[in-house]
Each structure stands twice: as structure tokens, then as C-alpha cells.
Length: 121
Image (tube, rainbow, N blue to C red):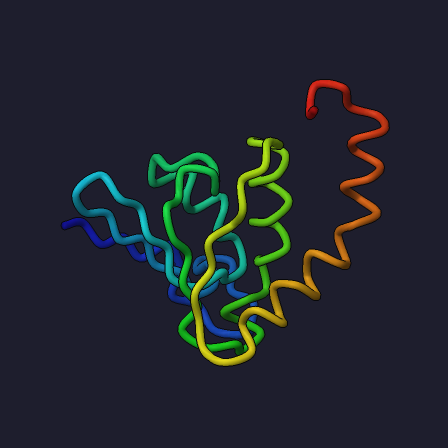
């Protein structure tokens, strides 16, 4: 098993620390805990270039510093694998509603990309 701390920051921006996120790799499975600020750049640096390569994503709790880049993860997963590929997210009570509201806010962007990027279909 390999554990990589992708970020250990707090809600206060810090140029030397990304927001809270952890990658756990075991038996060919990639698990990510939390979506702190800068998580996708840290994943790329850890050799997991897209959220499509993650098997399960877990939220420890719904504080803003732990979910701030969730919309970036959703968008990047869709852009890098636009086929029907649900984002598997597990977390505390309220996680499903949080995820649904986030996807709703991205509806216009997804529509625009489908209209203007044939390569995403």
C-alpha cells in the first residue's frame, strides 16, 4: 500500500501547501480522500494524471477546504473521459446532495462543451 499526501493545507491559502487531499494506492486501486485546493495538479505530480484513473473518491467531511476543488474534479473527469462514467463518491450524510448540486451548476458548461467540441462526444 502507498499513501501520498496530496495536500495538507488549511482554509487559508498557502503558496507552499495544497488543500487537504490524500491518495491511497493498493492492489491496482486508486482511492482519493478529499478535494482540497490544487488536488488535480498534485494528482498529476503523483503520476495519476486524471480523475478518471481513480476508482473511488471519499469525502471525510463537507468543510469547504475539503471540497473546494470537487467541481474541478467532476469537470476534468468528464473532459478526459466523456463517455458515461459516473464519479464514484462516498462520504458523510449530505454528500449525495452536495454532488448533485455541484453537477447542476456545471450543466451549462457541459452543454457548451458538447456544442463546441466534437472531440468530446
